[in-house]
Image (cartoon, rainbow over all chains, first blue to last red; front, side, top):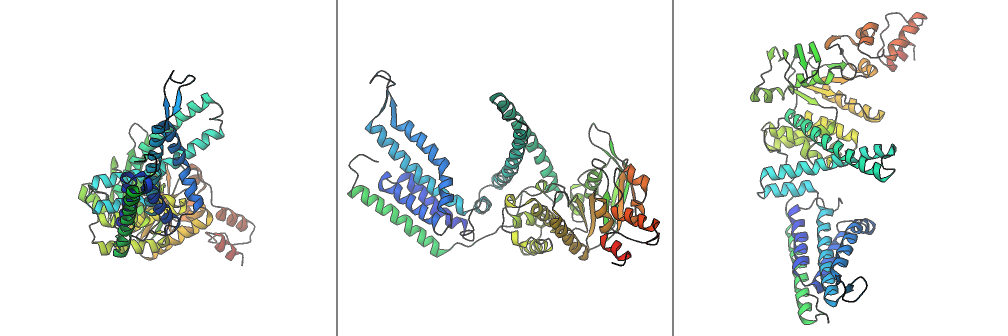
Length: 250
Length: 275
């Protein structure tokens, strides 16, 4: 999470990022998706203050997943058709893989823009003010918070197991992983009970009410975001119509 | 801050299926004072604090505030929690919100205060605990010491008359211990009575106006130097004698200081030696 864009209203950031996600899903793969990705990455590296190194590291996991998915789409298996393994890459397959990858990369970049600039607590508070049921917001907030606590627990338990050769071989690994899961589950239950008592001590009486940190919407930012989104849509549709790629990239 | 006298009398408690943890424990929290609750691990310090705060209902005995027994109805406990707040040993048992300021605001909002008053209390609590610079920080990004102080701030924002803390200095580095104790000093200066459960006898001797030693499910309460000089009591509670008292007694035996010389910490001991 960068501090650069923290003071901005979550709604404003959702407008820009959400608009880019929609663009990634609905605009033509060419040139819509590269445009969406370019806007998102520019915003990330610019106003959001994310470094290229951090961006690359974050994108690594998604890139591996996307690559696997693209290969799965591009490659067709026709046993006996061409001899050998029957694996072929057809033009249709390659086109589908390219289109899917383009949409996925653009969508990922847009989501990353939101994730890197907007803490979950801000998003949940914003959602609560916009009518999302209190219970949903409370549960989401608690799960988000406890996720980090349990992750820390899981890391500690795993480190303790590894220090005692718990992952030295396959059999030990399976045993240790099972024990780790059980330990984290038991601790999650125990922690939930203790948290309930802790919150009861501070007067918990139903909903988890906290002070909202309302940040006013910026008309300038909203206008700018709409202008950017509008431009992306207009250019994408115009270029797709006037200068489509030679091969079919819907 | 209204100073109230909180007392526990004849408390008996056992967890389901387990042996008795408290067997007739009495405790008297001096209004505006500092009480250290000492005892070995598992002796019942936390249980006693939880009974004081209303989190647990004792099987026998009662907790009173200004002589009136705590009403364990929903409304009664709600009132009691404005008098006695407990900060647990593990801050993650109390921090639930994704940001510091939001978490601290939870208690005052539950008191039904208007938003403006809640904001005042949040800022006041953050300032008292010297964590105002962390107000917008997600709680999962705080260090252990910072989470402890934020957990204390969450309780302080309720403006309790009595603040009970379960091992607030456990797991903290020396600088963090100093910061935490300084924050507690500020709270006491503002009129809050403090009950601090610990098994650090040196801290108890230096810090507390009174100590209460939990042993065999009962409590002996009194002057820190007197109680912690009681060899049998200290041994029975599986504690150690404070080093200051041991050195003072040795110096007294050597005739360097008078036998009844008072010393509670390094500074006072050095003062006896003319340092």
